[in-house]
Image (spheres, rainbow, N blue to C red):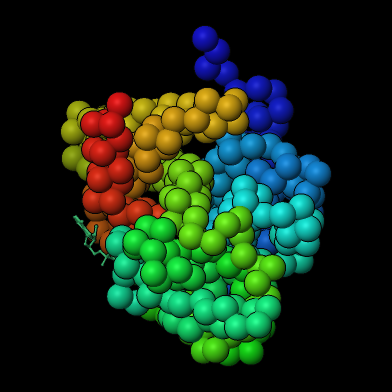
Length: 380
Ligand SMILES: Cc1cc2nc3c(=O)[nH]c(=O)nc-3n(C[C@H](O)[C@H](O)[C@H](O)COP(=O)(O)OP(=O)(O)OC[C@H]3O[C@@H](n4cnc5c(N)ncnc54)[C@H](O)[C@@H]3O)c2cc1C
C-alpha cells in the first residue's frame, strides 16, 4: 500500500496552488460581489495545462487523469470555488464526448477546450425536473438529416459563455423512460438557442449559470453521441466521473475553512488568552481536520481506482455525499469560530459559508447520492 501522491501529482498540486494564489486570489472579492465571470483566468489556466487536464494528451489534454483533475480542483477551490467552475468545469459535458464520441467528434471538440479557446456546458437539468433525470422533457425530432430540438434547460453552469453544449434530449418517446434519451451536441450559436444568465446566487457567484431555451434548434444528426436511446445510461456514467471533481471542490473549500480558522484562533483573544487555547475551540478544529482527512482519503482513492481501471463508482458517490457534508460542516464551524466577524465580509469565511451549500445540491443532491449509494449496496 502506498498513500503518497507521486512526484508528478505533488508538482501538479503545488503548481496549481501557486497559479491560484497569483492569478485568482486578487480577484476573488470583486468577482463574488459583482457576479463576474473571468474568462482571462480560464485562458491563463489553459496555458498552464489546468483546463481539461483529465483529457488524454492525444486530444490536447494534460492526461493527468481523474486524480490529477481532482487535485487541480481542490487547489483552485481553496482560493475560490466559483472560479474553479470557470476553469475545471469549462469542459463539463466533454466526458461524454470522450467516452461515446466518434474520433471525428473527439478531434473537433476536445482540443479547443484544453487550449481555453472554447467552453462546453452540460445541459441536463430542466425547470421541472432535476433529480428525476428520466423526467426531462426536451425533445429532439428527426427531420431530414437533422434533429429539431425544443425544450428548456435550467441552472446550466457556463451556459451563457459556452461555445457548445451536450444536451440530454428525448429522441425515442415510444421507448420506456430510461431508453428514450440521447445526448446531442448543440452549438451555442445555433438559431433558436436563447441563453439568459441567472443572477442572485447565494454562493459561487463568480461562476456563470444560465437558463437555456431551445426553439426549433436544428443540429445535424451526426451530433448524436453514441447510440440513440443510450442517453440516460451515458448521463449516469458521466456523473460517476464528475462527482470526483465536485468532491475536489468540497475538499478545497473545507481545507480553506480550517486554514482560515486556525489563523484566526491564534490571533483573536478572549478572557485574556487566544481562542485556540480553549478546548471547545480545539474540538471544532479537530473535528474539521478529521473530516477533511477522511474526505481526502475517499476522493483520492476513488479517483485512483478510476485512473487504474478498477472503478468503484459507489465510492465516488460516497465522496460526493461526504464532500458536501464536510464542506457545510467546516464552513459552519469556521463562521462560528470567527464570531461576529464571521458573519460579515471582512473575513473570507462568510463567502465560504455561502459557497459550501451548493455542494449538497448540484451534481446530485445529497438525497440523490443516498439513493445511488443505498441501491448499490443492496445490489452487491
Ligand atoms: C449553481 C448551480 C449550478 C448547476 N449546474 C448545472 C449544470 O451545469 N448542468 C445541469 O444539468 N444542472 C446543473 N444544476 C442543477 C442541479 O444539478 C439541480 O438543481 C439538482 O440536481 C437538483 O435538481 P432540482 O433543482 O430540480 O431539485 P429537485 O429535483 O426538484 O429536488 C428538490 C428536493 O427534493 C429532493 N428529492 C427529489 N427527489 C427525491 C426523492 N426521490 N427522494 C427524496 N428526496 C428527493 C431533492 O434531493 C431536493 O432536496 C446546477 C444547479 C445550480 C444551483
